[in-house]
Amino acid sequence: MFKKITFLIFLAVGLWWSSTASAQISVNSSNAYLKQATGSISYTLGQIQQATYVNDGTMLTQGFQQPFLLISSITSLPKLGLEIKAYPNPTMAQLQLVFTKGFQPEAYQVQLYDLFGRLHFQTNLEAAQSKINLSNKASGTYLLRLLSKDQVIQTIKILKTQ
Image (tube, rainbow, N blue to C red; front, side, top):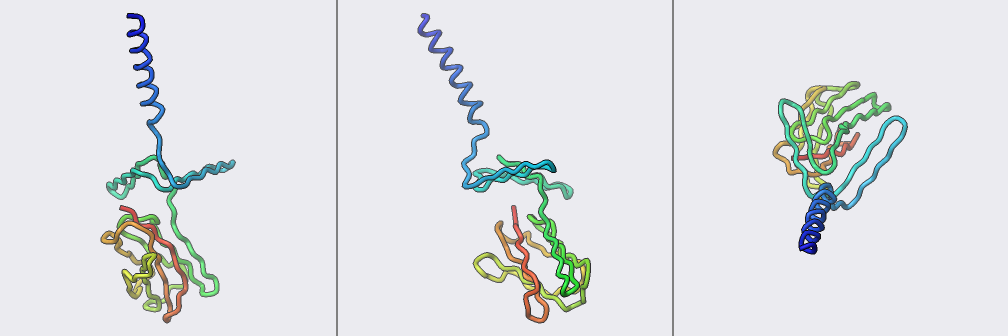
């Protein structure tokens, strides 16, 4: 009788310990963590499960790693008198491309390439603020090229999420 009770206690403790010990395990290909006086940042790559929900312009990404960092690309090209912002990046649907300095109507062209070099989108910019619809594109990394007179001025890496 004592052996049965001892076995059941060890079984219950073992089941409880294994369920709590493995609650946040994730198999990742890479990760890093940096902490300084002004803040901290961490990331993981290769997460198995992740979900993103959007409601009324608010985006929540759930997974093993909770991202609280919004990356936007702000580029200043002083030789040309240009300043360009591309946001939000990563994006799920609409990418805003804003010239805050130096925009000339119909002088610029935008091209969107995937990492295999395939052209997905091309248009002339007619306004200093433009929206680029990426909702029909697959998740992944894209390169947004800004051209003037068939010369590449700037290339911006864009991350498209679901």
